Image (cartoon, rainbow, N blue to C red; front, side, top):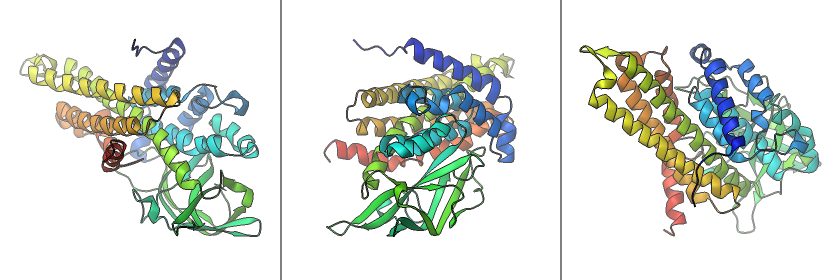
Length: 383
């Protein structure tokens, strides 16, 4: 029998994060957003709540939960603001998770406790100015010189990479050639502040303005050989697994934004009057909001299904791609409709839907574009 009800533990977590988002994030995040300022105190509060440690074992300072718990937290945060949600998503699924999945015992002991506590943040250096969807076009290189890796190259659009809390970046780099001539890609941990590692100024972005996104450059950047994360030459396989998991998380975040658009539209439709009636009495508005709710609900079921297969240890690549595609579409469509419902006020930054509209588009691009998701789905169908 299928049952999509949350367990008592998951529901308690959802309610806790929902309350935190409503009472702690919603009243202040708009000001951070307009100033393009990273909300350090909010992030630290999330750390004290244990959100950054949700899917990690207690032995490394985590909460001993699962990846679905992280997804629930992301959904509730994104109902209010996506900048805060993506800070958590990138810090956990892209920054700390690769260390948990592939790191040595020493690497886990050194880095995970402060990352799980939310005292520090980690980032994932994959995308480059000349290679996004085509990761095989990667040009950043790392060569062994004695007992050190020497890294050279540039990374682009890296979340959490330049905050005062950032402790490390997991950098994907070409470390040689495979026997058949293809690029050998490995992942190397580069601590913040390492000589030769330069963090550029923040991007001027359309959305996610209260999150940290930077370009990174490496010029003869040296780190110890033991900073290799996992096996040499396994970096490509590692980040494919990382991105599969991350797509489920981004799907949850997208559902949160889509649901937030419903929340704000229902509230506004009950208050706003036109032609002597609340606009929520007009069937045109009712149908618009009903369609928005359908999108959010359907997308939620998609990411629940992908997360369930992941937790059971089953292959979930297709389901993750479906969830990411459906959810990001829902977020974009709902943001557009919510802005229309609000009319001129939807174009004002003082209302959350304007922020939602600016934040939604990147969800169809980051962690695999919609086109890449369709490619993955087709391949899983044998095409």
